View 1: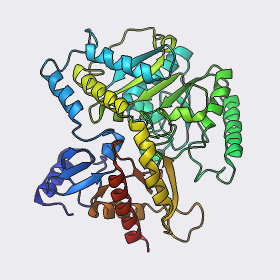
View 2: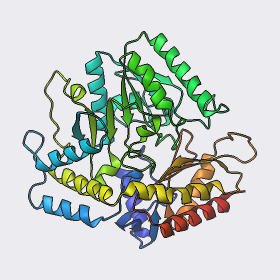
View 3: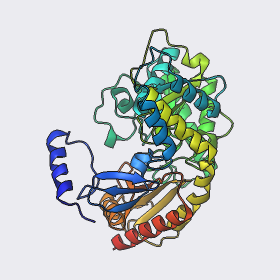
View 4: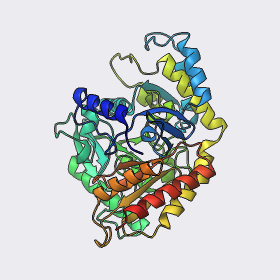
Length: 434
């Protein structure tokens, strides 16, 4: 499936007018022209099974009728007003999110993106705690603004060392390449908690918050064992430090086993939860959930021009209601194992690790013959990405070294589509294996 003249012309125009640092997939990039369900079509008419959803953003389905209808009807009434006026769709969406948040006395602030959601969470925490010190995980990613780049523990996505925060990075974001990789889960958690306590002792005790993705997205779908963040939370609570759970990629049931990624880590509840991507199903939507005492703690006025706009709120609410009414969390739990177990059964020396939960799966691609964990092989990961495209399948790529395949289909995935995608991906891996 090669790019035609229209695609090549658009690529040239893109390179001429947009920044050189914007990443674009494929040797011959494609223009996605339309979508339906779990499939998309490019401008040359080629059809693909979409296992990446525009970076885990098309959460339910492309062109979901319920979302399309809600957006169309709202656009016919009013598109924009800002938070300076009463906004019924925004309030109804916030009420629904608060109801499913599992946070007591929850309040919600809506933003246009996950980056701005994490910005707002950092603002709340640093203002409440009167501190600019932040704890984050190594290999993390929290956005592309000045403040969120500053707390991103993955240099591939952090282009400056300047920061409004003093940031301390702790172990626990991933096991496969961790210095603690050979330990059992319990020993791993104990080692990471000991590291956390040591960092806290060195910081002087003025940390505002700890922010963590339950499963690191850009980092390559990596995570520590279940229970790790809960063990961290016990230490943090003793010292009055807030816990921010970045659920931009793990929220809304994608992991199958829980509605939120943090729920895999025990009874402890985060003080603040951030979200984005999938809730809007492609609309620009993010937000922050926090207990009222945290959310209401700012001592200055604020507004949002675009956060919670009537249009995006109406679409996001229709999307969330569809997800809940059709129990898509259970669907992720049902079909995720087909992909996870099928990929783990692949006998290829370039597959170093297969990990994940539900419909959020990472495949670490390594250089054959380099032992365990194996040297990262970003060139082989790129080759698998290209091969999957030729087989009619779109997947993502990430990780610190750019060597991890990221697999995250829409949550309405069917059994036949799971099998079709697995077959294409296995064939692509075998095609690239030396």
